[in-house]
Length: 411
Ligand SMILES: *Cc1c(COP(=O)(O)O)cnc(C)c1O
Image (cartoon, rainbow, N blue to C red; front, side):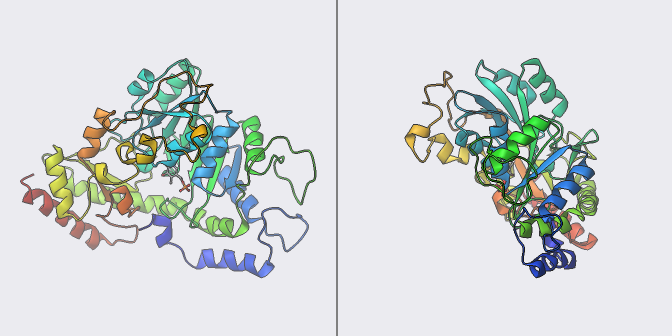
């Protein structure tokens, strides 16, 4: 089940796609004076840059390729450690491995985002960067993380895949660290099936990211350029079809997030005084995306029973967003053993991956249930809840279901 943007796909998206298909020209580069060239990708990049007040935006194929591009632009590679949270979608971690670097797992706190104290404990002479993941639409404690990065001379990457449209103290998520990334897959705030974006205020990083995402080319090239490729890159270019859908989705973003806030407040207001439950800490109330409402139960046993009655799971059991469930990471199963970053001769550290290595994270996730507000995704543990089109009556009905489940277990 999808994210909120899916529920609002309609006439506007159809119109954008039709406009493009009628022109027959689906490639992101073209001649500006050619009326068939609809420059949808460029338009999307410009609209996001302007609206989010970010200097440079680069559309790519996915949130994963955005992360690989961002890490590569920062020069992260063999021998480097990147601190990542133990609770995140696995791409935050695998992208580091694909770049040849070593992900170092850190605890999350009761915001279910990186615990700054544990980040400080995990810093070694090999640490190069911190990856702040704004998990479930909730901004990380960016004041603390920025301060730590500055103090230890580390780079800060914001994986904002789950928080497109969110902000922290008035600044858009993705624009606060050295570089930020978004995803536009099916489950995110807005979507085109797949898609992603890299953002930065640093011109050099943008030029490096651009070159990496398209075989070494320079930014904003029109038409086909021959020669003068600056570096060896990849092809992570977004196509015009994806951007056409995203332009229409993006123009609905503010309304979409407003609606989610309304629904989440309405749900939370009715359960906030129930004894025995607490809520996830939100690091910026007006800046969060309000895609989910996370509650903590007193212990694992109660949480498991409540989840079962609601036909959902606790976050611990929600699959590959939890480090304990990432069996390919636990065994560092790379496609070619020579690509294992832990045994790379440049690597002098001693990182390990073991189930149960993050006890604070384990305790929190064992007791947590994600109630869907905008992201209805069993893989995220949010099979129970409402969606962006839910009526007030539906909210009330789900609130009653939740209360009933709690009373059944004596909560
Ligand atoms: C979805 C997601 C990604 C990856 O995005 P894709 O578009 O699926 O490649 C990366 N990080 C986080 C935190 C995500 O939730």
